[in-house]
Image (cartoon, rainbow, N blue to C red; front, side, top):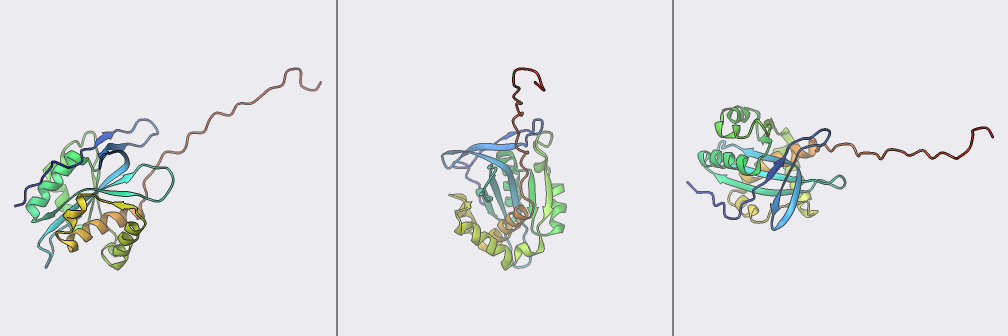
Length: 205
């Protein structure tokens, strides 16, 4: 079993929702301070000829305008027991609140993973299955397009994805296509109170 090396790993903080504001994640990534509007894990289960499982955790940059900008915060490819351990560790370190799986039946396993219950009183956790087209050439093209437009970043985490491109691709495509289908929510812009000017004197004179 491969042991996770955490020396260069990202640790995120989480700011809970206050009033009309949305929660957000924050931390130092590749030496720079970053703020994310959401953190999502993509999960590919071992199936048929794919003996490995894969988990990829993505952070979406917090910005009110412009296209979605994603960073691969961490990833792990390997046999299922190690992937489950990695998923639990990523929950503690990266505090993701969504898990997007590559097929509906995989969601049953998510509910049974005790390690994913970490921090549930503060940080919710929900799971969804990706859209069927996510695992086709359509989903692959979406990944290629974001990378070509410099909207998908990864740093050292991307080297992990090269260990099994098939499963890494499934996990990445599952998460990215779901995030594109369901955009992040931002609070409405606060409008300044309008100030009405009054002229001195009496109305009608």
